[in-house]
Length: 235
Image (cartoon, rainbow, N blue to C red; front, side):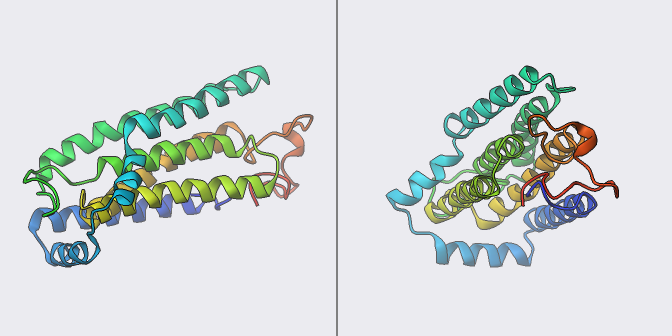
C-alpha cells in the first residue's frame, strides 16, 4: 500500500479487501468450492524444507514485532524532536494496528475451526493465518511510518520492496512448509490491508503530503490545486 496511492482509492481498497475476506470466510465455513481448489493447490505447493521453515519464521512475533517497535520509537522521537503537531498519533496508530491482530485473529480461528494441512499434526484453528497477519502489519506499518522520514525516492522504493519481500517470503514459507492453506494466508492479507489502511490514513492526516522536509513549511507542501506537490511523498 504505497503512500503515493490516491487518497480516494483507499475506501475502494478497504471495501475490496473486506469483500474478499467475507467471501473466503464463507467458503471456509460452508466447505465451498474454493476450499477444494485451495486444498488441491496446497497439495501441489507443500514441500517442507529448512528454507520454507526459515521463511515462515519471519512471521513470528519475536521476529516481526521488534522491527515495528523500533520504527514506532524512531518515529515518535523524531516527531517530538521536530515539534510536529500530534507527533504521537502515527506511532500510536501503528501500535494499535499490531494489537488488533491477535484481537481479530484469535476469535476468527475459534469460530471457523478449520483443520490444518496434512503436513502438520491434526488440529483446528488455522484460519486465518496469524503469522501472515503479524508479518504484514508489523513490516507494513513500519514501512508506512518510515517512508516520510526518507529523503530519496530510491531509498523509499527500496523500503517498500523490502517490506513486500518479507511479507511474501513469510506467506510462501507458511504455505510451502504446510503450516497453512493458501486461503488462510490470503485472508490474512485482507485483514492486514484493512489495518494498514487505518495507519496510512493517520499518517496522511497528521503529515499532509506524506512528509515534511526540514526547513519546508506546511504551506509550501501543497500546490495551488490542493494536491501534494511533486516533492512530497514517494515517487
